[in-house]
Image (cartoon, rainbow, N blue to C red; front, side):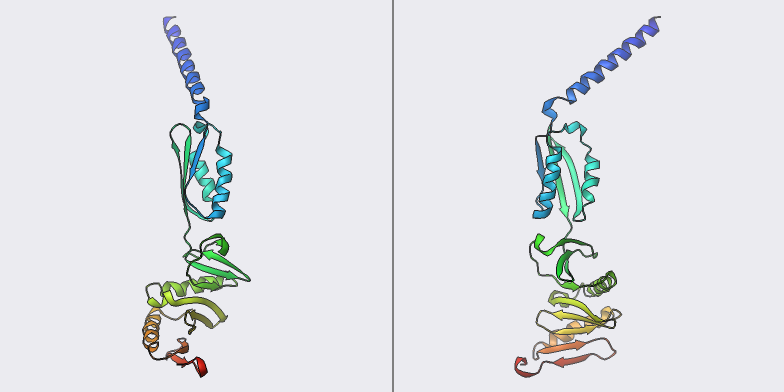
Length: 230
């Protein structure tokens, strides 16, 4: 009988403690009154403001931090996100956006694209940067152009690129900022690009170039003619 009585007391005390804790956690001072969001691009900021409005006023103890992070990571513009509690009623949303490495022109629109070829925004949504424009019609073309840029990654020539596009299946144009065209194709080796970089830098000292064709065993160079030539 005494044992049963003790168990009843323990259960009653446990129930009271749970209720007190529950009532305490549901107090108004746990309602979210402030949401801090890290600096992001204007359009992403606008969408994050909607999330902010959704959680303001809700009890911070009911907020599923990991669930909110997973929801935010579904946004293709977001690379990394951390949602954390601050004080009794504040939330911090720390967002790292995907970094744009290139522009991708598809039909008449230009988009931002990261190094892996993921298109995640429009040109007007981000600050303008000096980056190559990849003119693409299909993913196959985009991937082949990215492969060329990987070969050029450690070469000075990469910083001179203005545009890349397919002229035909066997001809890709790399347009440099001074107007020089490099005729290439997807199977040209990295070592050939290294030779081309050095050749271009040397020829530029005394000549104005029309194009450098590196598709074949021998590199073909054509100078500009007429009034525009030096």
